[in-house]
Length: 173
Image 1: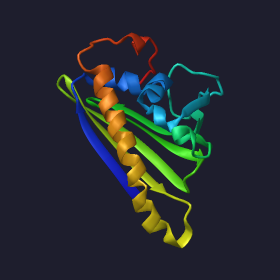
Image 2: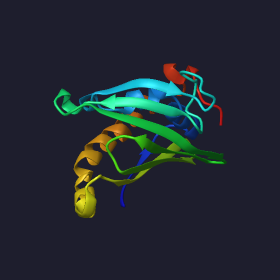
Image 3: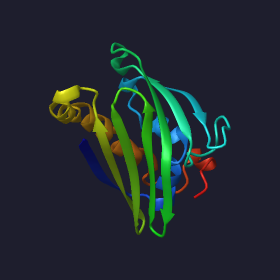
Image 4: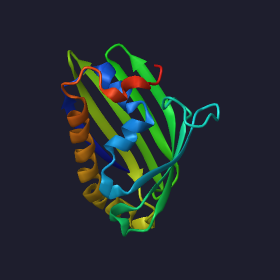
């Protein structure tokens, strides 16, 4: 299993950054256009369509067609863990179906005064059989620009605006 990790400091309070990442609009806003992401459905833990927040048990069905030339790939992600503590927030999702043999993405948020440290950690395996460990390391070529964009976009959207317009819908802790 390979691991990718990226950390960024955002000049916005923990609650603002957490609220943004706790709704499907945040996922869509942070996905680079070149990935060709379409969210097909979101089901809450009780089966409710389009829940207000991404709570533990929520399933997201997506399709992606990078650069509009790669084959379209379907992906089902599920929030498997969610934690809120004093100065710390976290949620973890895994892949129920999609292009990876294994995918687990941990999103962590650490409050530091009026700033937030955002940490993304992805543990993954590509379906490459015995050459998997070699191929897994090459996935960083795709991860790095995507996560660099996600973190820069988080800063662009959240820094300096104490209550952005999208903040209306938030998940409860």
